[in-house]
Image (tube, rainbow, N blue to C red):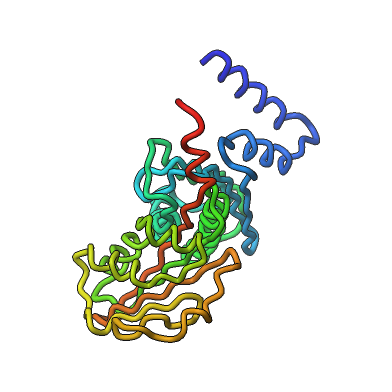
Length: 272
């Protein structure tokens, strides 16, 4: 603890020095919290006379509820604490809470929003929420893109659900299906593995009408063979999977990545 306190005192003193470069200090902080991250993660958003900045750490064990993730957000917007809390919950609900890299959890899960209140302008709550959501979304994608060993960033969009909860349940079941994740790593648009994952959930869906598309190619139509799967190109890092449950009008999106040799090696080649 004494070493930690000395470091805090030194950091505060450095920032307080005349002419101190606050941007460089922010980058230093974002770098200092890295563990298995390969790059530091920082984003900014500029509103009309106010701003939001953020940094994040995380490259594995990224799953809703308890990720190995540290996120610090700062703003000069003069909004009450209870408003900031509500805005943060709303922003996290559609960003960090939809990130499911490997289904594993830890105890570091933290997203903190700090405000100096120094902005000398009135800030509309809806504008602030939009800006905060943008910052959180970009940080979440940076975490996903730096996931341990990942070769593909996978967007799983579930539509036609009876409720948003159903759509999330299905999206997360697919995101945590190792067979599906291995198939994407191997360049195989294996829609059977997606249907199997859907079938493990309690979500409402029409089995005879399920549709699945990979990168815009509908490889499964009405629970059967759709368009020629050879038309699916999985060579790029970004992969989009669309699942239509044909059970309602709700939808949700979950983000994950593939399961690779590098992930297994990185998490088996050391002991803690």
